[in-house]
Length: 415
Image (cartoon, rainbow, N blue to C red; front, side):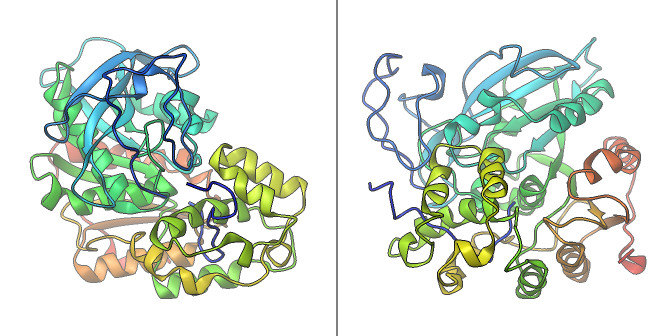
């Protein structure tokens, strides 16, 4: 596979690629002999992430080990790296290994186990080295998970298909995220961990879309998983109207920090449109930065965009929008009628997933009959809305686990 100029880049997608590598013939790879058949984003991390045994069904725990100090989360008594089986969310049939973590609170678990929260992480990149179970988490995420751990919730978190394990992470494709999330929940609930048989999903940005998608796919893909609600802050929604709003908010001749997101999102275009040629659309001077997404985490790509003062007009020779149709279809949700309540927190100063985009999701989900609790925080941005909404999300989650009927506010939306 040519990892050079065929790396896809797309210009109209917000931030928030995927064929699995063939399974090797040995049960365990040697640390001195990294796998040879690597796809975009693949790198050797450790033997733990390589599994070549038979995969008989999705949602089965394959192995576990303790995380090191840098990978662990404050507030957890146990920090465990997991490898489990899941279904390829692009093809929908092949089984593959996926990695993730489980954090257990301090103290003694209550009867029935710690109430379980499934954290669906935001954008980190597509390179294996960016997998949160390996690379750790940004401080805000560590603080946020610590908040929930100290309130007595266990946290399970998938890296998502292709992050850490073989194959390209299909960035922003919601079905792979949903399958990865549902199967790690299955894996921990069926193993010997003191966690509840019910779960609430919660995520930010890319992870907010993943949380909504997981709730939407659950009834058909994993009816045995008792999802009782979801919390989504900064949720992306790629409807035609939302894309127009996004395009209108993007500067063409000013430095644009969101270009790093574009460079990730178009790796999915490469997977769905193999004839897409990067060099037809991306300028020669930006090409090395565009190519770097295969081995560089998002925060470093974003830093390069800013240090080089890249604008949209400098980055693209022409818009690749005509190639995005099939990719957009993989970024949506199978239904907007979610069977469980969804809390949607929106920062009024959000530039990554603009309020108009989130309002479009909330409106459409309400029209479809979902129970939506929509809250607008006028002074908060894309990141600040995460800690800024916990005064509302904690009672929402407590009500769900207490079995209290949650009423939505579709009749009095804050937008």
